[in-house]
Structure formats: structure tokens, C-alpha cells
Length: 147
Image (cartoon, rainbow, N blue to C red; front, side):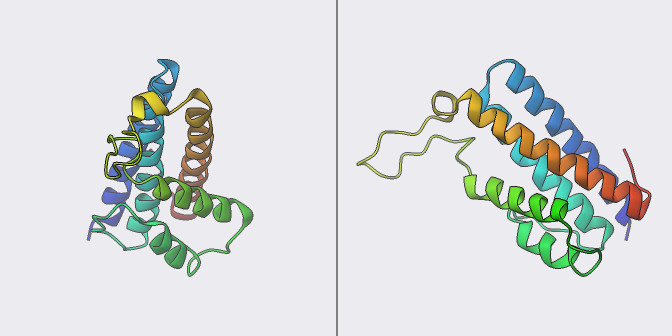
């Protein structure tokens, strides 16, 4: 299997999502920023999973798999614990940053573009930057893989 090639592919896409998140933030597209932060975190985790031989995960919820695999390979330090916490945060958002939600007639339609605020985007961006930087550092230091 081409684990290193797959890992680099996920890193390239995570980096692209980070750039898109920053561009969305700079243009006050807060829901777009949150969405691309969510994607960056997921792809960063999938990059680490790929180098450890876990590929082919098509679902978006990868934090539990990441946690179980990473704890078997490296010590669970405070940064990795925060990465896991941030992963769970983004997973809890589900499709909220991307799609209008209208399943409950007793609530108004949720429109991401109108509902997300600058503070939401700032928080998401800080979390995604933390995850991306920590996991790219881990890949470089432990596996000698970088963009």
C-alpha cells in the first residue's frame, strides 16, 4: 500500500482547506471558514491515520479512530489531547456549517451564512491551526513526512 503517498495527499488537501478557511475568514464568510476548518482537521487526522496504515475511511467521524490508533503509537501528551478535543468539536457540528437545517417546524430555518459570526470563525480557525500545525509537526518528526 502507498501509505506515504496517501498521507501526503491528505496533507495537501488539508493545507488547501486551511488556505480556504483563512480566505473565507478574511472575506467575512464565517460559515465557509468554519466548514473549511472542519475539513482541514478531518484531513489532517486522516493523514496521520494513513501513515499508520489505516486508510479508506469514508466517513467524516474519525476522531475516535484517530484516538485509538495514535495512543498505540505515541505517548498521549497535552497537545494530542487537545487535537482530539478539537476533532470532537468539529465532528459535533456535523453539516451545520454547510446546509440549511429545517427539520423541526417549531424552529426557524438555520441558514449557516446568516448564523455564523466572526467569533465562531475565529474560534474554528484557532482550533484548526492548532490541529494542523501539531499533526504536520508530528508527521515530520516521527515519520519524516512533510508537505
